[in-house]
Length: 440
Image 1 (cartoon, rainbow, N blue to C red):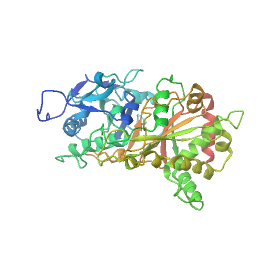
Image 2: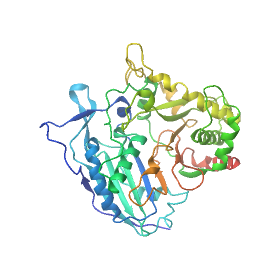
Image 3: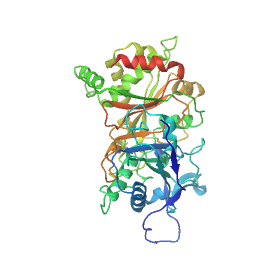
Image 4: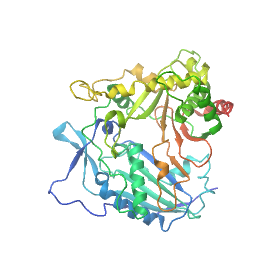
């Protein structure tokens, strides 16, 4: 069923009250190495609310304006400091975020937004997008669209410049918007600004991977909206429980889901030579390892990497695949241990440009046999409440990327773990879905 979305003129929404005029000069916040690695990269989230509230667009607009008082840097713009080697900073100008109110002529159910699978085309209509080049320095750091549907439900879509927050930090911001919409005088979690100078440097390998990825051309992969059933996840967790090794811990929901996706994808695209590498790259929140303070909302994520052969992933038992994932996570805490000098280990002296991947390494890490996974489980995105309760579903826009990728464990009231993916070419979709069906 077609859905007509009518958008109103965008406006800038600034902080409800300006900070104390302590000085004439604009305040600048240095971005951390975690922030700079992801600067200008767009991420779009969709909070789908099936319970009506009064005037959702105006409610969100007013609450966001009040939230920006506490998250003042989010209302600024990114600039390069010429005196500091063009290092990126946020100019706290208070200019505001972009806001669009919209209406849709169908219900959420008619639009297919409450139950997987959903189409990518409609999601594009529900958000404010950016060009193929990503965010520009002059752009607002958040592009917000609130679309009210005929049933009274609504969708809050936010496209954010990744430099300002990671998934955990953005979910914290959105919970603050919800708290203020419900009449709380201030957010329950006091924010600690992005650009915390006490953070360590991004580990050199991770920085090199980020640098290599941003120059690669996006590729076309099929859009898939799939669900890994809870029965499958529980079965894998129970099967692994009797084989836990020292320090490995039990199998988590995300590990079970990632193991299924990785193995099924590898089987579907299996190269002729089983010794071909099948890299897995997945994001990990390292706030506790990097010493980030409570309430910190900037980027604090690193990448874990496993590079087994395709044969190991495709032909091993599912417990073996879970072990590969756990083994990839083990080095993470050691990347941020304090040295005797008191300095936090991370980038060390090599910095963001001190290590680079060769063309051959980049082809292995980001070629078609690679698989990049992000989890939205436990971010807190499902706890956003704008007055009518928490969202029925949280989704994301799956833009074209150079590497096959998916976002797993998206919050959804339905059974199982929802996954949005662009991880296989069209010719491998059926084989991938057949492999997934074997686990259900």
